[in-house]
Image (tube, rainbow, N blue to C red; front, side):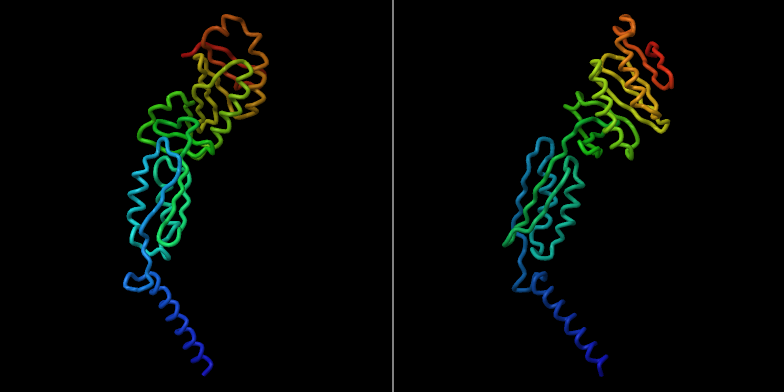
Amino acid sequence: MKRFILIVVFLVVLLGAWGVSWLFTDKESPLFKPIAHYELTGKFVYFQPEEANQILERYLGESFWSVELSKIQTELIGLNWISQAVVRRHWPNQISVSIEEQVPVARWGERGLINQSGEVFFSENRAGFEHLVHLNGELSESVKVLTSLKRFQEKLDLIGFGILSLSYRMDEVWRIALLNGSQIVLDTKESHHKLDRFIAAYPQLANALRKSPQVYDLRYSNGFIVGEPP
C-alpha cells in the first residue's frame, strides 16, 4: 500500500511539473509569453552587429521563460571579433545582450590575431593591423608567446630595440626579428639570464656591428655569437 501511495504521489508531481511547463512554454497555452524584442549593446569597431542580429532574430517568438540563454551566449561567442557576451531576460518579453569586442594586441600566424589574454581569434580581413608585432607558434603556446613578447620587449627597450616578430617552435628556440633588421636567436634554457647578459654587453660592441643588421645567437652558456643575416 505504501509503495502504491508513493507511485501515485510521484505521478501527481510529474503531471504537475508537466502542466506548469506546458502553461509557460507551449504556444497554445494562455500563459505562454513569446520573446518579442531584443536589445544589443556594446562598443563595436570591427565587429558587424548584423552577424549577431541573424542569431538573435531566430529566437523571436520563442518562450521567454524556457529559452536557453547559455545556448544564445555560446552562439554569439562563436562569432569573429566577440570576446564575451552576456545574455539576460528583461521583463516582460525581451532579451538583452551585451557584447564585448576583441581587442587585438598582436598578429598571429598567417590569418590570426591575439588578444590581451593570449587568446587567438581569426578574421578574414587583417587590414589595419600591419603595425602590430607578428607572433608565430603552436596555438597551445599562445599565452606563453604573448607573455614572453612583453618580457623580451621590456628588456630590449633598455638598448633601444623594438620587436618586429617573435617565433617559438617545437625546437624550443625563440627567434626575435627586430625593427632595425637584426635578429636574436635564444633557447629556453636560462633565456632571460642570457638576454640580460647580451643587453649588458651590447654597448661594448664595435660601432660597425651596431650600425648594421646582425644575427645575435645567444644560445651559448658563456657568451654569444654575432654574424651577418643570411
